[in-house]
Amino acid sequence: MELPLALVIYGALFAVALLTADGRWPWLFLFAKPATTLSLLLVTGLPSSDRFGVLIVGALLLSALGDTALLHEGRGFFLVGLALFLLAHGAYTTAFLLGGGRGEWMSNGLVGVAVFAVATAYLVWRLWPGIESGLRGPVAFYALAITAMVGAAYVVLAGPWPDYITIPLVAGAVSFYLSDAILAWTQFRQPLPHQQTLNLGLYWTGQLGIALATRYVVGG
Image (cartoon, rainbow, N blue to C red; front, side, top):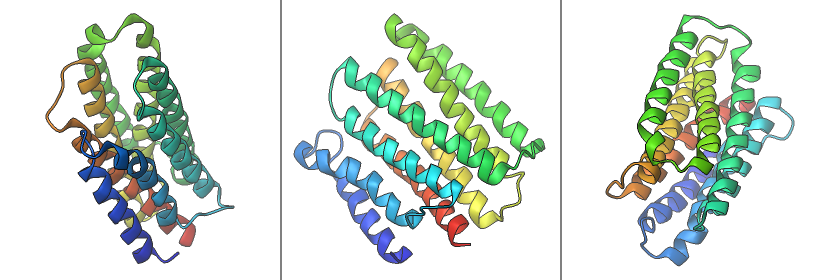
């Protein structure tokens, strides 16, 4: 599918999902949330053989499943969603390092890793008292996974890809990280006004950046 049409479909679903978030028309939100994430597969161009593309598509599919799990209340659904997104971050991290990093751990990559490692440590420290004991292990492990993902995106800056690939990819990874930070703060610290709208806006903006970078990589 041509990119402009893919972006129109994604944009329409994105708008519906945000308009129905935070308890507005919940029956429509049940459809719009996973559908918005799945529509990003169209943005990637649905690559089927390139290693980088396959990993990104897998991460988007895992994310859509995680979205669906988190639509439901309860600790069990939360843990399933956490596990699915953890796997998605693993796929993203692998794609970034194998596809664009090429093992070139230069200064900008290391600075990015260090900055987000410190940010994650501070966030987990602030949230720790509000996390029930049974969730502390999974949450800490997830924090490591998303930090590795965004750190790996910064390592891509040290690789051979041009700016029109690396900039949307890194911006997308950072936006995804911020969306999860907001979600964690609301879940374990205190509610924020219009939390779901803000969280999902950053989340899908981040996923869009990664999907666009994927299309450019695969399409040359």
